[in-house]
Length: 597
Image (cartoon, rainbow, N blue to C red; front, top):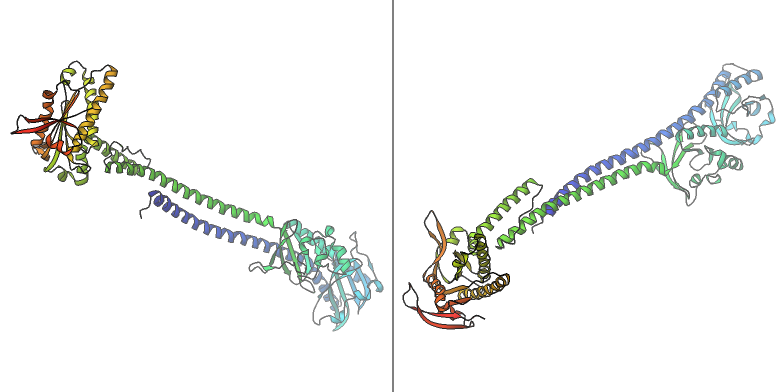
């Protein structure tokens, strides 16, 4: 099945463009997706590493500080009974470690001395064994042997939550006491607040994935301190005024975390009534008795901005693809329009509808424009050729070729001659333009009658013509010629009525029709030939036309036909004139006059 060029060109080009853009779009989108989410992962990893590093940088000095104090003691650096020296060492460590809130000296498992940082940043020191309730005293008996220091549990003390580090005071292989360094939760809150301010996120610390929150960058507003006091330790996730952390609490609606690539981080999507959030967590190394989990969360829309830009780029690519396909289809239709016009005109020529065929409009495409010009030149030539050569002959030449169409053959044919009575005298009183106009109008009407009945005009003879009917498939040639003669008579009468109405003289017409065997084809010299018809029927038809002026010289139209033609159309009313001797022909021929209304 043949496809329209609009489909082939538009569809083919459109598919190629769409495929190319789709491949580029797919590769670009895939790369952009990977790059975007890789950058987001790297950003999250960078923030979490920064958070972990900040916590480590601020809290590890607490551990290394008391390990240094223990090392000094082991080398006889100070005496546990010298409170002045102990106070000096403790104050120095507090001053150099901003995260450190208090230091307590235990002799055995009994608190003997402490130095703490008050609200004004001063370091009061006192000796009071009853300061630490028995249930708050670390279980030194559980201290692992061989460790320079360990992290203690997170506990409530004097309305504050503390994270502690323990170090044994060992000299000469004997444990004389312990040093406990405590970091208050408010110090941890200050640390996470600083990180939150830098990264524009909410930061929190919790003990294990579900062990409770003990630091929050928004602790002043979410009731963390009260929740920790009520819990006597880290606050349960569902106990603070934080809708995101509540969704992390154990329960049927608990949010599940998933690994974030190979970063070691975990990520979760949390939807709340007000907004959606992305939560990222990681383990803080080397800090805490139990694993500390550092976490941040940010509104999902901040991350989705990157994804939105990516989606917009994809949409832009799709729109570009659709525009390219649309342009391809438009170009295909424009090309097809010119070709359809050419094809339609070519079809008219193939059906020999030369007068219906129209020139092809110009095109902006060079090849189509050149084809159009060539076709228009051919069309004009065919139209001009058909004016000088009978159209039936042109049709035959187009169907069978020049040699075959013009080769002389014998045919049974009907011949018709016409002549305008007295037109030569009439023309002497007319301008040449008027003569040409009258004759052209007259011949146009006669030719239309001939061609309507399948005949062809052999030649024009002054103010008359000769027409021939051969191979007529619709009806016998004699009947076709006679029907054309009757149509000529009616056309002339109608023309005369118009002429009289316009004040012009009427015309009179003689017509002669005969039928018989003739020779039709190219006749003449090699230098010049003429496609014509010869034979006795031609001469008889010409003589019948001339006989009209003898039979009735005043008739508006007179049609004389031979008895051969009359026999072929018995339905036509005729007046029999009888046998007539015609000049140039041996023997008489029967002649009839067609009755006209």
